[in-house]
Image 1 (cartoon, helix red, strand yellow):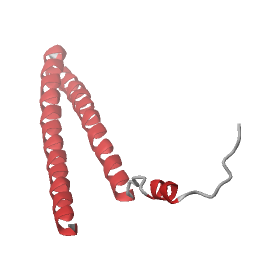
Image 2 (cartoon, rainbow, N blue to C red):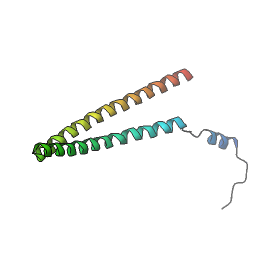
Image 3 (cartoon, rainbow, N blue to C red):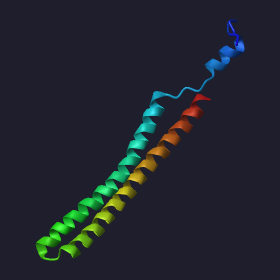
Image 4 (cartoon, rainbow, N blue to C red):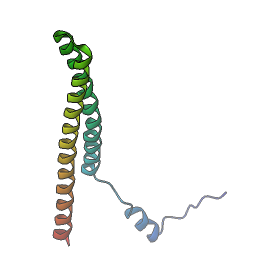
Length: 110
């Protein structure tokens, strides 16, 4: 194997310069999106667990623990899905705003 000791030519310099660079803002935006989406799953699970245990506790106070458990589970599930819908809607709105901003930015730069 021989190493190429020649200085880089003009084509090699252009190829190095043309590599796409991802901005810090884009990386932060991607990480924020991942955080938002992972929080949705956590919120759903916590709502179901809290609703189930609260229903079980309330059912025990009123004398029918099993019925309270079922009702608490249903309320927790409903609350979790409502929150999940709100979070996904908010996330979609943010994505649409970013796309519109990028399109306006591209038009203005041309």
